[in-house]
Structure formats: structure tokens, C-alpha cells
Image (cartoon, rainbow, N blue to C red):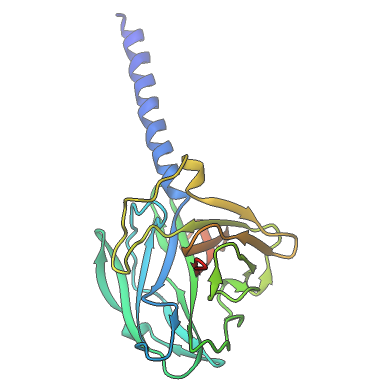
Length: 267
């Protein structure tokens, strides 16, 4: 084999390896979801009002790679039109080899408790860019609705148009995607179901997909930033509206608005 042929073969091999890495990375990079996972979404009479909360940046449907989270910029709860900062109560822990955060909160009184997170930007080395996903989840106590549709003024936010709890399989969920307080026309929203059978960890087994295309559902908002999704199965579902944000430390930044809902089967 001539030197030129050897060089060409080495080049082709290098390109093939590079392409394989890019494809593998791309398959994982589309499924980044910032989780705010409560131990319960509904507090009924006679149940404990102490809520355990985990903040994890991961790939929820595949129960796969988890990203390292720096301490969040802000974590809090909004209840009866008042915001309470819980950032100082966060404790670091390790989840699947990466830093995550947790705390507990005692929900006093009836109504909605809207937990919200403004994380520190996450640097994605493969893209040489930052990712910042602002996330919310609503826990209700005693079935009394109060604040579920409140707009909290996060930089990126999904404002629900359907009550984000007490949902049945087959319901539709609607929300408005906003960035800096304004609706985002035709925003792209990724949707995934959490692959979890327990609060403390992912199952990793038992949830299979017909193809890779089924793992992350992708929908778009209309011209007013409103999206609609029909919910096919019980469990936790995450909605992540992704958009281009302002540059951060001289690099591109992808900004996301995330909301989590829990769905139940009707028996």
C-alpha cells in the first residue's frame, strides 16, 4: 500500500470516528432537562406536608447521563402571591456521578406552591456554549387552586393555561412560552416522560421505545407562543421550550423554560 493510500485510509478512519462521536453526542444533547422533582405533587388531608425536592440536570426519558450542577442562582417557592427564597436551604448531593441539589419544605396551609429555579449557566464543552434552563413545578395542597397560573417573571418561563396538576391520562396540557416577559411565537418545545419508578432514582429498565425518534417528542407553539400536548401515559412529564438567549461570558447561550406535570390514570 502506498503512503498516499495509507494517509487516505487514516483520514477516512479519523473522519468516521469523529462522525460517530458527533452522532452519539447529538443523540444525548437534545434531551437536556432541568428537573425540579418533588416527592409528591398533591397533599391530601392526613398526609405529611413536608415535601422533599431534588434539583437534577439530566436526560429524564433515557435515565442516562447527568450533568454537573453548580449552586443555583435562585430557588424559591411562590404561594398566595408571595415569593419565598429557599436558595440558602439547598444541600449538595451526588446523583449518578454528578452534583445535584436538594432540600425539604413544609407546605403550610392550602393552595398552590409553585417551586421555581433559576440555575447557574451550565457550560457544554462539546458545543462551546452555555445552557440555562429555568424550571417550575406546582404542588397543590387540599385541592384548593391559588397560584398555578401566576407569571413569576423568570427570564424564560412557561405560563400554564391548563392547571398543571390533577391531570388524567388523555388530557391536553397547554402553556404560553415567554422570554423576558414576551410570548415567543413558534417556540420549539421538547417533551419527555420521566423514566422513574421511585423518587430517589431512575429505573433505567422497563421503559422502551420503538425508535430513538420516540424518546423526545418535539412540538411547536403557535404564533402567540401557545402550545398544546395530548398526554398519552401516566407519570411525570417535562416540557422544555428552547430558545437563543443573550451571550454569556462571551459565548452563545441556549435558554430554556421548563415545567413539570404529573399525570394519573383514571381507575
